[in-house]
Amino acid sequence: MVTYETENGIAAQEQGFQKQIGNELGTAAQGSFQYTSPEGIPIAVSYIADENGFQPQGAHLPTPPPIPPAILRALEYNAAHPELDTRFA
Image 1 (cartoon, one colour):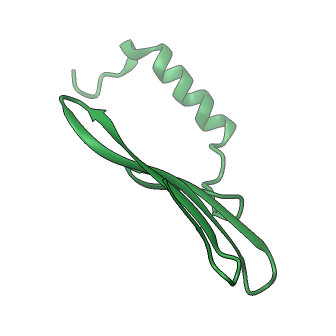
Image 2 (cartoon, one colour):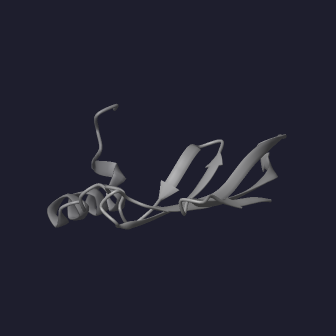
């Protein structure tokens, strides 16, 4: 594990590990970093980096809007009635 903190308040930690990916052994990392934005807002990010890429999480990061309820109902209906999907028949 690597951990450090700079004089200006940036702090980070990361740990690497091996991970089974299918029949092969891959490498992944998990960690976090924190700093204060120029506006004085504390920023904290946690992440994992693996075969799926860099996946950050933080309250300041944008997220996609929720799926509208009508679309969710349509997806649930389609999943419950696969016999009605005749696109490839």
